[in-house]
Length: 222
Image (cartoon, rainbow, N blue to C red; front, side, top):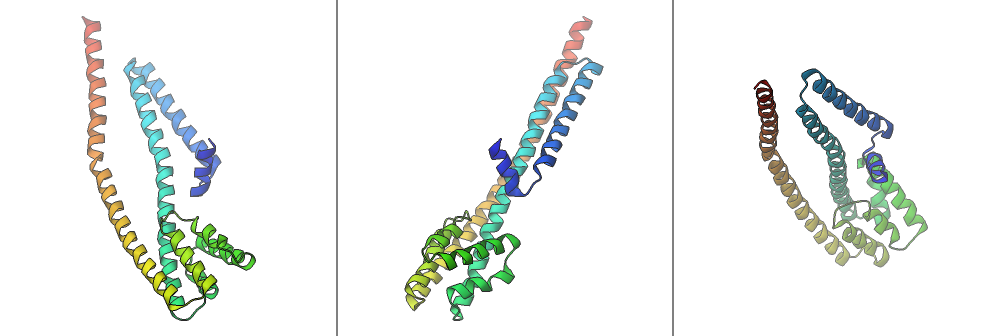
């Protein structure tokens, strides 16, 4: 339950409203199933109702996880964008501290909060810890390497060697981002191609229940 609460908090959903929505959907489905069984006198409808209940709940919970994945992906992409701006400022003779401050007007609300925290931590802690903490906010595998590279600029000076290393690392990030985008599109297409199969399966289940119901009525008549 705590993991689900954390998930709702992460995606910015109202816990109380979401629980009420899920409860109402489940109660409605159960009520419709019970009414259908009583009115039509078909016990098979109860099995169909259970299957429908499981499918709808799976879709609801899966939508929360998909939202989380989308937020993580957007934050990783914004990190790449911010580092691109950072590279521009550094190449135009800004120091690291001023470059981070100059990112504020281009950042989202969430990113602005993270940058403010980073700057405050740098003010109070001259070690690598603030940079590692900032990198931990992202799912991008290269974020930690980027922030360590930036810390080296602060610790050892912004010389041409560190600039070349940083620029090379940024190019690596861009190539990785393009690959991730291609992989994401491939996965989306794969999931879309599976929808007809799911639909066919649902139709098959409905037909099966229908045939069983008809056969049951015929046996009762005989």
